[in-house]
Image 1 (spheres, helix red, strand yellow):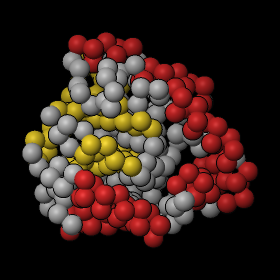
Image 2: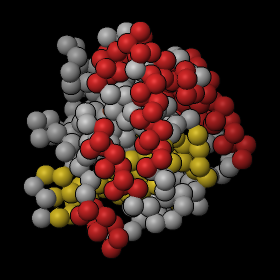
Image 3: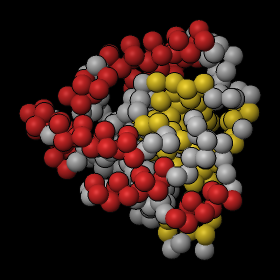
Amino acid sequence: MKIAVFGDIHNSFSQADLEYFEGHPYPVYLFVGDLGKASFSRTQKTIGLMNRIAQKPDSLFVMPGNHDGPGFFMLAGELFRWEWLQKLFLPRTLRHIRRITEILSNGTFGGYSFFPLPEFTLLLSRPYSMGSRVNYPPLMETLYGVRNYRDSVRMYKKILDQIRHEHPEKPVVILAHNGPKGCGHKKDDLWGSDFTRKIRDWGEIDLKLAIQYGKKIGLKIPAVVGGHMHRTPVQPDRRDILLKEGTLYLNAADVPRVIQGKHTFYELEISGGTARAQKIEFGQ
Ligand SMILES: [Fe+2]
């Protein structure tokens, strides 16, 4: 089964994409999140277009990124760890999230859940992730009752136990925003930081523990897909794919994903318990 994966699109999604995928349809489309930028009205237009890519139910899944709902002040509150500021902007953020969910009427936008698809189970991981802790604690507590890594790991284990119980033979594909720890700590590794004074692995520890736990209880996890740490014209050498311990890790975040009319996305092939991925380009 071949599926399409989009990294952080940050508004780089247009009518040209819809036309391409009408001619080259995929049964499932995964978006790792960070759909827009600062302007929420522009983001709403992008999401409205994206929503039209879904040609049947259970074909469009979107992982909320750290920009998908939280605006400037919420983000500042997270960067400075000012909970008072986050609480002040929580109602506005919740309104934005509700609006995104409404516009994405053909898709699923959320986290900590799973969907049994024909050839694999899709696990939506912790949403709004941007590294170093469970981000936006007031928001995460309101939406999921999760405030810290311990809560998150508990949540993951519960979900994985349920998958193991209901679909023990199906491989599991994980969709995340920021990827897991363990994929390297150098600047050009999948989730190595390129902005901290000392370069380090910026991946999520709870997601790494979840993957370990899933494998321990006998689940096959052929692919883990994320983004957030961008591959840009300034930093073009960030790796996109890593094969490790039977799992393919993909950082799909080419930003911008459209350069001079050339559009990119990843094709991920899940066959039995294994995965392959390749970047596809179309346009001029
Ligand atoms: Fe992000």
